[in-house]
Length: 277
Image (tube, rainbow, N blue to C red):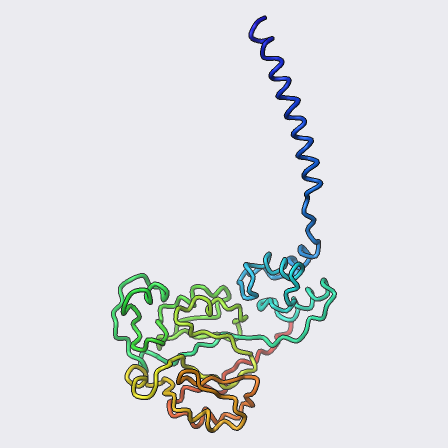
């Protein structure tokens, strides 16, 4: 028997085994197939595709899956707003509910003039990198804005820009409240506030009195005067920092008037006017 004939049997056996395994795999793919709810695709198609993460899920795919499989709220897409929420609610057969839009707000008034830059940092031009280096933050206030524009670089909607005073500026007409700046600010200076918020504390310092004034002329000194004067008890002190409960605030502005440091801002243009198509 020559070599060619000797190889026929093993090759035939391998062919038969391959065919058997192929059939078994085909059967397994049918038996163990994961049936995806078609609504996931419908919800995903209704989303704007920003993948900003503002909903708390890893991108639009994650949020679509969360809505269908986990019962996530249908109105968590900040870029999509009420229109997208209504579309998703229709797909899910639920009420979209009322959601007050939010916008980013910087809790710092430490401009180059108010809080001198005392360090000549020469490392990577990124706020997150600067704070990892001892003394890397140029701002004299340890709670203040680093001012290197990391928030600007992570904003996908062009809502942030660096001002000449050394602080980032929020364009409320473009901000969708995705929270990217909140997540990437190493000092935790950005917060999301309702567009209806009118009185906000623009400071994050937990120092008090002379200690604050030694590094920033615009910082909260923890005097508690705003807390004492608020007629609705909407203000409390968190480690010498005034905090306003927006649910209780009636926008009377008394706190802003009595604040000796003038770090409570009133009258910010946070109300969004819907533009006609």
